[in-house]
Image 1 (cartoon, rainbow, N blue to C red):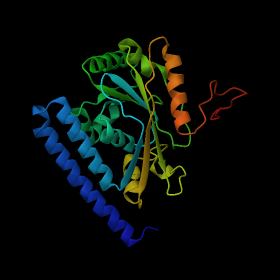
Image 2 (tube, rainbow, N blue to C red):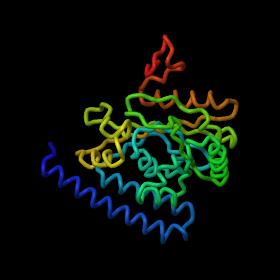
Image 3 (cartoon, rainbow, N blue to C red):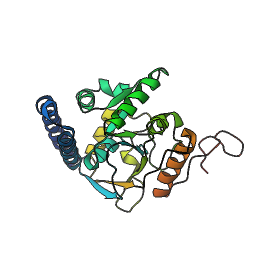
Image 4 (cartoon, rainbow, N blue to C red):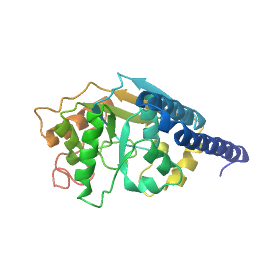
Length: 265
């Protein structure tokens, strides 16, 4: 049962969030077209940092954030992941095309350089890979969530090797970023996860009602793509992030007697 105070807190934060989104739309519409990459990155970082503060998200960062001309790979738990990374080292994200249809957020994503992929169309992968390679060549940092979906943060899902093809084409380094949300006692906070059947609205409403959200981003040293195929690259990055979070790696051969569905090794 939600108390009147909790409801009031949620409504207050939602109102602040609405104003912040409106400010973002205004900035992207009027300032972005006349700004260089460096200035746009600073504006995205500041805007994302304020969004986190509105939602009472505290962010702890360890390791050295990457810069341009490379690919950032991270595990994926929540839509908040995007703003954590944006607050630290704004990249160009690769995201599912459905996000483009989200009110306001979809428009902002498109205008700030998100590369959308239509997952149901295999033919679209080549186009997106080419766009990623072009972005890297122009000096951008591109962010990919190789799991292809979200988890509740208690495990790492297998990284999809085809998503890392642009790293091989561009001979770009991979920069692993491990993300987690924790409770005050240091345990995994599953209340932040945007996974399963929960809708975006339900996820947002749940986060608005939390007293505090504690997020951590751990950056690890770059992984050289040269000398590896995409499967080796995916497994290496997957292992680095699992180790950083002290989580088991996904099973190498799922749905076998030795490794049933959902099991980890």
